[in-house]
Amino acid sequence: MENDSIASGFTALGQTTRLDLLQTLLAAGATGLAAGEIADQLGIAPSTLSFHLRALEQAELIVVQRHGRSLVYAAHMARLRDLLAFLAKACCGFDQGRNLELSRFLDSLTSEATAMQPDPFNVLFLCTRNSARSIMAEAILQKIGGSRFRAYSAGSEPATEGPMPEVLAQLKALGHDVSGLRSKSWDEFVKPDAPQIDFVIALCDIVAGQVCPDFGVSVVTGAWPLPDPSKFTGSAIERTTLINEIYAGLRRRLEIFINLPLNSLNRMSLKSRLDDLADPHVLSQSAAGTR
Image (cartoon, rainbow, N blue to C red; front, side, top):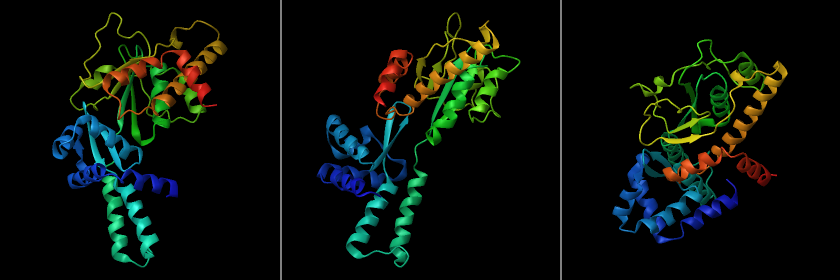
């Protein structure tokens, strides 16, 4: 753990309300508490609570995950373990190999932290045939999203012949696992045993003249309209160029998406951010900002 990171942790704790807040979350255990419950227990205004929660989250002393419309906060036990280990070593000459009892205590904090990792966000990509655009988006997010995201795709009229061979070949050439990719109906995601979807992103005008399934009131929706490679009538080389361009656009959008502060934005703000990513100018500005 770097000294700057340690210092930011101790700085965030140098305030009585934050100490009370952290004690409350430690008492709640791995399940954590919703913001409203914390405010009631501590008797502080929501605006004040929000300020202190943000400070603790920025110092990585707490973790937050979205449960429906609520944000649930819990103590970040692995981070606290590192702070305690630093103090033990700096003040008491702690050697993890020699001091067995303290070592076991610190290891128990790490075990608890593993149990309280937030659930991943489930993202469903939609297009009419689920053979190209949504298949690419599923593969890209599955690769770059890590443990924070699970990617799915579906269509209103899924292709009976499955994903386009050119798309699968391109994805495989770029290092994606294509073994689980298939064209499927969006009806699969409204069944009782379907995963609870957090984000639905349409990659074409899929709702035009159709009734989109109800994925739940807490789902955040977005639209990134992109051309359909299956309808392209140019040469094979031109089609490959189009697929490459669609892939690049999707990858750039998803790289921005996974870095959004998803846990701290409300539903309307999240939808606005998703819809902004449909604008090529937003992508250009973001790319320029990373140079």
